[in-house]
Structures are given as C-alpha cells and as structure tokens.
Length: 394
Length: 221
Image (cartoon, rainbow over all chains, first blue to last red; front, side, top):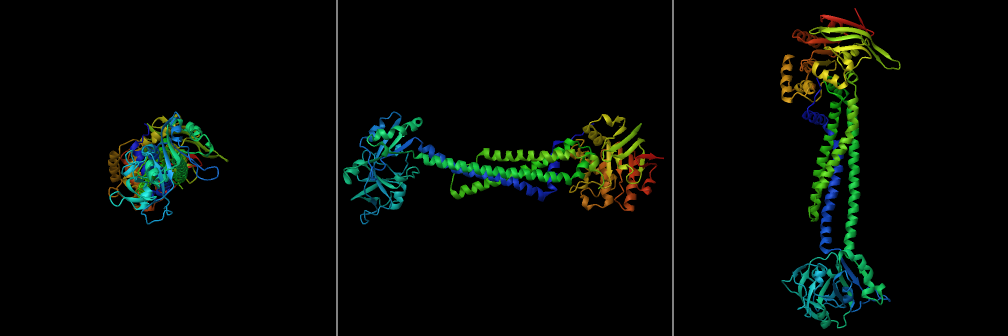
C-alpha cells in the first residue's frame, strides 16, 4: 500500500499549477527569458561578427611583417638600403620577401588635374610577387607580372579605384601618373590589413624608374616568416636590413590590429554574457521568491493533496516541477528571442550568421539548472507543510 | 473486526503553555458503522479526526487502522494508507481551483498511480452516484456550496476507502443543503461505507445511528 505518482501526473500537476496563475507565471518566466535572450543574442552577434574577423585573420595569416624605413634623423623620410630585401631574405625563418618603393608623384584621373591634388592616393612601385606575399585578391583583371613590370600599366587598390572613378575594367581605364598615361590592368579586392596599398596605384618597379623617378628609394619590405619564429625575426630584422641605423626601422605586424580588435570584441562579449548571466540569476531568484510565496498561498492545496495520499516527496516534486517548467518556458522563449535578434542584426549588417549551438544549449541548460536550484527551497518548504495543520479550517 | 481502534490516545501540542487536546481516548469503529463525534469547539474533535485519519500522530496511546498500528509507520507509509484506505471531506471543501469537477474527483486516485483514463471513468461514475452527473465539466466556482461538497464527497469515495472522515462537512452550508449532504452520507452508509463524522451541530448528529460526545479531550457517555 504505497503512494504512487506517475511521471505524467507530475508534469500535469506542474503545468496545471502554472496555468492557474498565468499572469504571474508569464512575468516570472520573463526574467529568465530576458537573461537567456541576452546571452544568446550577445554570443550570436559577436560570433557572427567574429566569424568574419577570424576568417580574415586566417586568410591573411599572422606571420606577415611590414618593415618600413621609418623617419630619418631629422624627421625626413628615411630610405632602406637597396640590398635590404636581399638581406632580410637571408634570415633563416624568412620565407619570402617583397620590396616596395614609394613613388613621389600622384595618380590622377586625367592630365587636366594638378599634380598636387592627390586625393589621398599614393603611388608605389612593387614587385610581381607582392600580391601573393600579402595574400591580396585581384578582383578584376590581373596583377603586374614580369612581362608588364616595365610597361605603363597600373593595378589599383579598391579605394583608389573608387576615388579615381575606375569601377571596372570595361570602360575607360587610363589614369594619369606623373607625366604619363598608364593603363589600369587590374583592381585589387579589399585589403583590411593594408590600408596604404588599398589607397594606391601599384606600378612595376622598372616602369617607375623608366617613366617617373630613376633614383627610386626603397621604403618598405614585406616579409613572410615561419609562423613559429615571428617574434625572433622581429628582433633581428631592423639591424639586418639597415645595420647603419637600426633604430629608424619600423617593424609592424599588420595582423596585430585585427587580433587586438578580436580580443577587444571577445572581452566585450564576455562582459555582456556576464551581464546576461546576472539577469538569468535574478530571474532565478524571482522564481524562488514567487514559488515560496505560492507555497504559503497553497497550503490548503498541499493539505488536501497530503490527505489524498501524496507523500512529502510528491509535494516537493510538484513544486520543483513548476519551478523548472517556469524556467524552461522562459529559457525557450529567450532562446527564440535571442536567435531572432541575432538573425535580425546579421541581416541588417550583412554578416554571415553564426549561432553557436553551444550558446543555445548552454543558455537553455543554464536556465533549467537555475530553475531547479531556485525550486529547491520552495519545494522543501512545501514538502514540510504538516497535513493536519494545512487542512485545519481557517 | 474494528476498522478503527484507538486506545488511551493523547495529544499534547507543545507549548508554551502545552495544550492537551486529547486526554486518553478509547474508541472503536466497526466496519459499516456510521459514527458522529459531537462536541463544542475546542473539545478536540478535529485533532481526533486527524489522528484517526493518519494525518497526524498521537503523543501517546495506540492507533490501529484495519489492524495496522500507526506508531511503526513512516510518513510515506501513512501517506500510502491515506491514498488507498481513507477518504476525507472537509468543511471548506478544498477543491482545486480552475480544475473541473471530474478532475477534482479524479485526483482522489492520482496518488495511487492510477492511469488518467481510468481515473476519469471512475470519477464520472462517482459523480453520477452523488447526483452530479450533469456537472462533470463545471469548475468549482460554477457550483453551489452543496454541489461543491458533493464533489468533495465524490473525491473521498472514488477510491472506495475503508473509512470516510467528514470534518464539519455541513458547517458551511445552509440547512437544506446540509440536510441533503447528511442524506447522502446516510445513503452511502447503507451501501457499505464506514463513515465517521465530526460536528458541533446536534441536529446533524441526531440523524446518525451512533453518537460519541467529546468534551475537553475526553469521550463522555
């Protein structure tokens, strides 16, 4: 002769208990929903944003160094020794080197525009291997190669192409560079790590010497290093490329900027997830509070159930189930809401949607755990109500 | 065989000051009997009913329900005994709000682990038996006081318990409804139910074949 309560009846009782106090249940679940939605939306949005960033980092690699001449002793532009690229290539872990010379002229739409109006665009003389070394994509046309390096042809960075009004290669594709018309043979895709190249007309080095400045000064070399030796190379490279004045040499790892941005966003995400967790915790406290109140209000129900044969455990289980169901409702609503916010944000910003399943499951799981923990105290109190006391006439 | 047997049952509520609600009660109720326990308020009637109904334990003395002693039972075993062998009707009806009449009755079988469809069938039969076959889907708020108490009686009866305890079952009802409830209890007794009623109302008590008076925690006469 034992009391027995079916699992389906436990769920039925929990659900019925919430259903008879719908308004209150909704408000309580709302707290959990807000917390869950915050966690899901924050992780979803930041994952979507970071997916782009990380993909860029992956594609561009973190083992590229940009070594530039820096400032001269008296503040003027310094130059790197002509053999600096060859010297750098001799450092063991260096895998590839490409030298770039800044050309002291401007690129213009036509010869009717004064040379001083640069539009913020530069001209650089490059080697054909630069495009592969920095991982640039040629969006249209092709890059300068050995055959065209000495010809009056130019490749434009994305921004330079826009500013010069050469959106594609199908129409008028001449630009005026120095005192010479150059034909645009290619346009580069965006270069997030190389804003200077994005805003420049790239010409072959022999062409630069032939048409513009025979005394071209080497200003920058790009160095691709074995990934494990990046820091070592950074230390030795100034003295290698410019033994005369190593302190003038500037060594930059362009990916550092991206990495820093990624770290900053990761920190912000953690902070926001933390805030979401606090909301979830507050939601849990609200559940504990409401359920404890409910126990006081429902003494009569507890009493009659005990009289009908419910054990302490059955009563406790009923209240615990209500708390967990409350949290589950809030958690599911929050996950849906958070996913909707993320999808909306991603669509507006044109990002790639990345909703980590771990974040969805984790947020829902956290909500359930919080509901269960919040339910323990009220459930214990409900189980302790003495049946004889509870059925006493008011 | 006695369904209920109390010997020298005492109940003292711990103070301060301690209150002696029952001071040595001896009582036996036979199967099929119908007993009214009468006494003024404060005489210990409710305490006696809670102890006879395994809702509470006595401070001293012996309580046997169908030959089984309460003293050796755990709380869960007492719950099991209530679920299977005892039924209760209270003055305040204690129906679950927001749940139709048949579900209220069906909950009388819930803690026996009876499947829901079977509970529903049993609830319907009992509600028809107490004259509420037309009120199955009504919520407690849509029922009159007398109807509510009939639902509560149906809930107590649905498991066919050995004893039904009624605690001032007519206390909240007008005289016509109260009389109807007493008629129903008498009728149920004729079909074999053992019924123990406590009441302070002598007019109600007079209609029961056996009356026991309680005064200051002691049975008199």
